[in-house]
Length: 226
Image (tube, rainbow, N blue to C red):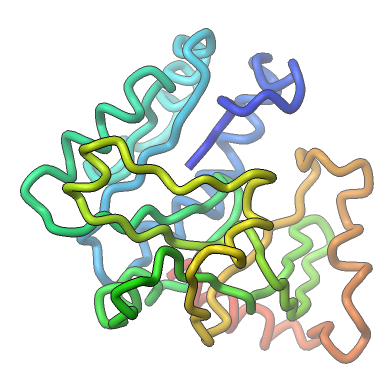
């Protein structure tokens, strides 16, 4: 999981941006991780080395994170993965942005699912877009979204094998893949999104996919956060 290690804008180095994004992480992504019915996973949130002190200061304002949820600098990230996977047969590398959410049963779904031997990636195509500013929710379907899980044999990963994904998540669908059918993700739209129009993702949704009942919205969000 990447916090501010990818080079999208220099504002990711500022204390203001970091404080805002950590607040969003705490309010949404962390709640989703803590709500997982199966806690047998490790979530590593990768940050840029030069922001270590700012991130540590921001995190100190909150309750300590669970042991299986860790902020790590980008130089430690790969070694941490290797540390945790030794002794296992398979690595399931789950992609999640630090402001989005998975259904609370998602980790258990991965444990229960039996992929084909040649499958390299499991893709979630169905989810929701949540406008956290105006408290609106819509169903969404994306062919190759940034909600996927790469599967490696641990021995292969330790020997340096990595799947090539030119262009990022849109390439996942071109790898040997399987589709998970459940509506498993929530894209959280907020004031700190990189998009200029923070509600554009919701506004693009067709009317019949928008959920207007406030009680229904809350019940759906509970399945991702509690």
